[in-house]
Image (cartoon, rainbow, N blue to C red):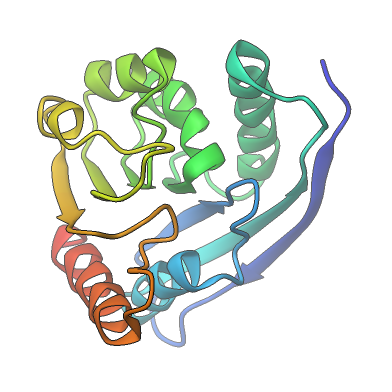
Length: 190
């Protein structure tokens, strides 16, 4: 197994009664303090979910099957002692935890899931749990809208949004998309 480890787990709790627990799994360059995972975290906390932010050090040269195995192990370690059935929220690289979610029958929110990787697609397709997939049509790295709609999950597709769900040169649309993300997550949690 390649080197690399979870470098930090940060737990946050709602101010009122706790409804459930969630793990926030970052991407390679999109950590829990970035706007996308932060937007989802805000909704979760407001809805009574405790949140565990995962920050990890990604090994060099991690790809394909090794990446899936590594992310799965990091997810398993982060869930230990937190919850036996956490809601998973994964961004990009974090969506490689889809096989773990499928095996454990965990609900999941996948932000810019790696839909160009057949292992991720297969795991999402075979899952029996609830899933929300969020991506943008300008994300040539990860998103495939036709594949997303074929997986049996709920889908939020944002026109012209890139891998960060931003529209280059258009702050107003980018901000509106963050609001749409929050609304979609809030509705999906019902």
